[in-house]
Each structure stands twice: as structure tokens, then as C-alpha cells.
Image 1 (cartoon, rainbow, N blue to C red):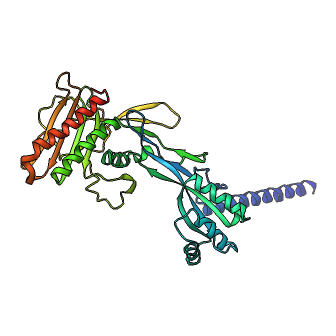
Image 2 (tube, rainbow, N blue to C red):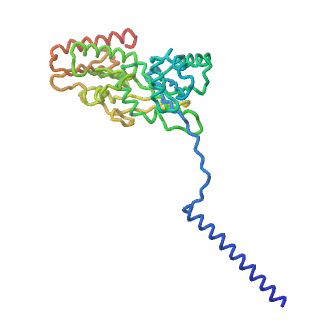
Image 3 (cartoon, rainbow, N blue to C red):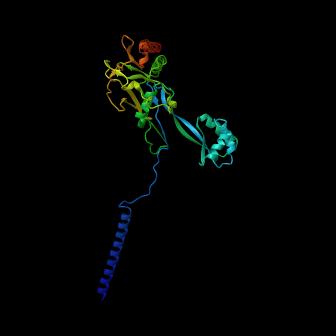
Length: 360
């Protein structure tokens, strides 16, 4: 009897174990079916930079051609009891009157209404001080910092800078980084010499004012290296206010097929860009006008030949031991007979300017 009871207990125990194993397997199988075979863990958002500051563009001498400038926007809480006082304070430094500010607040559906933007640090400090003096709660007014792209050289080398901004967009503005508040873009150093660029622009402007061509172009190259020291296309435009400028005017005609080169003995024409990573050593790469990176940018072909009725001058400066190659071209059939004098005058402006700067 004892033996039969013992066997019966073992059978019941084994049955219970089997049922438990089956139950566990069923639970696991159900979980896998619901999650498609993947166990999901708790997700947390990565810590990504909230700001990307675009890199700065420099000329060969380290002068700034393009940079990000911090600007602040002031926002007012819509349902604040102090809107009239706030409007009075902001109107002191803004271009809007208190009544205009109040109408903007009233018409908005946002909790915080942007009132004045593009404010510099000094203006923000003045507003903050006046708000504090009038006991305005900090919760009623907020300040949002943004960055504005600024071009100190205005129209000088505008077309080349415009193309550089596009071609090197990912270099200047990388993706936001992890575990940092701000991601800084890489700096770009052009071979452009801003002093020589000023001279070229002055000469090209004279050509345009006298001849009134459809457009005029200029290019100055270092003969020994093929580096572009100045490049311009007239009519100019100001990069700080280019929203109304057509895309065709933004094209750098000095570096595309609108100018030609037949028999110049330069191994290559290039704009060397020195790309500097923020906080790291710099490295050099070459920039092709075909929007490609290249180690050997081909010479611009047939640079001295232009269509009938158009004119150009190609000269070396100085005449002996030449250091620079100068190209000036214009397109205007009506004034073809006066062109040689105009272009020679432009050449004189550049040559005298280079001599004054001790660059020849």
C-alpha cells in the first residue's frame, strides 16, 4: 500500500510540474507574439544638442566673410496682467509703438507672442533692466536666442560665398551632436584675399557704370599656385539682404562657362578651402566649381574667348616676373568700341592698388 501511495504522489507531482512548464511556455509564447519576437525595454530620448551654430567662413588672411551672430527675440505672455506696461517698456527699443505691440498680442493665439526680434545683447540687457525696475514677473516675458547669418563684406565675393554656403552646407552645419548643448559647425578658409577682392570689385564697378553691360566678371589668380584670390560678378548683391535677388544673379559667372580660357599656362585653377573642425586641427581640401571635391581641379577652359560683341582682357601683373593673372570680361554689344579703354582703366586700378599694398 505504502509503495502505491508513493507512486501516486510522484505522478501527481510530475503532472503539476508539467502543467507549470506548459503554463510558462504559453506565457512566453504569448509575449513573443505580442512583441513580434522582440522584448521591448524602456525608451528614453537621447540628449541631442538644441542648437547648431554654423561655421565661420574666412579669407586667406583670417578675415571673416560669413559668421553666425546671436540675436534674441522677446516674447510676451498673452494673458499677462502687465501687457500695457510691458508694451511701453519694449517700445522704447523696438520699432513698434505700445498700441501696435498690444494689437499684436491681442491678435495672436499663442501663449507667448513674439514682439521684437533680431535684438542684440545690449538691447536685451536694457529691456531686462527696465522690466525688473517695473517689477514685471519673469514669467510674463521670455527671451529666445537665435542665430543670424551675417556677411561683413556685404557684396564682396558674394557669388562665391553663396556657392560655398551651398556646397559646404553639411560641413558648416553638421547634424546636432549627442550629449552637448550646442553643436559647432566647421570653419571654412577660402584662398580669397579680401584686399585684392576690393580692388577687383572697384574696377568691375567702373566697367559696369561706364558700359552698362548685361553683366561683367572678374577673376584674379595666383600664377604660381592656381589659387583664386578674387572672383566677382556684376551686378553685385548684398548677401545680408538677398531675398529679392534672382537665382541667376547669384551665380558666380567668373567660375563657370560664361568666361573662357584658350592658352594660359596654369596647371590648375582652384579655390583651396581649409576646413577647420571646431577645436581641432585644420585640414585642406580643394573646391571644384562643379560642386565636387577634387584634388586636381581642371583649368577653366578657353577663358579669353567670349561671344561676338562681347569683350575681355587677360593680363599678367606685373609684366616681368608675373605673380597674378587678371581676367576682366563684359557683355554688351552696343559699346564694343569703347571697351578696350574701359578695361585698360580697370587694369590700372588693380595694378596700382596691388602696388600700394606692396603685393607686387
